[in-house]
Length: 148
Image 1 (cartoon, rainbow, N blue to C red):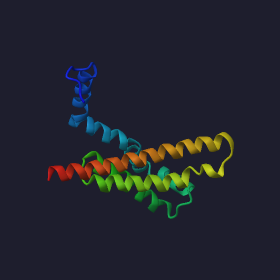
Image 2: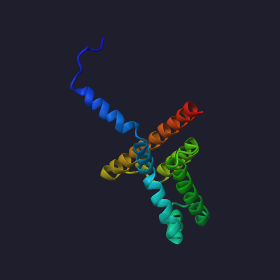
Image 3: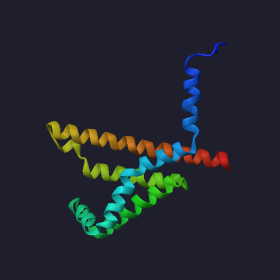
């Protein structure tokens, strides 16, 4: 049963609630969540040959095509999430991309010692990013349902 007397946390709850409900907070969170992807996509676009070399180093051929697809997913997915348009599609594309890239580039199970631990940590961090995209997709669908 709630207390009839306000607690010391009620003003903090109200303040935090105002911050979390502000549209700017959601926009900033979407921009920062997508930051590694739009930054990488822009880098690969501005230095296409460098991006192609990076893709070739992973054994993906034709490297130019995989680089172009990577740019499309990274920039297109980021744009959808940041603009809060069809967030399920943008978040899904970036989540699937992250899952594939993580399995290809962070194979901790093939390494021993500290190198394996570092790759495991990076792998787990990428799983957390994927979970963030799942939440973005859920909130996008729920928000669209509530608006429409």
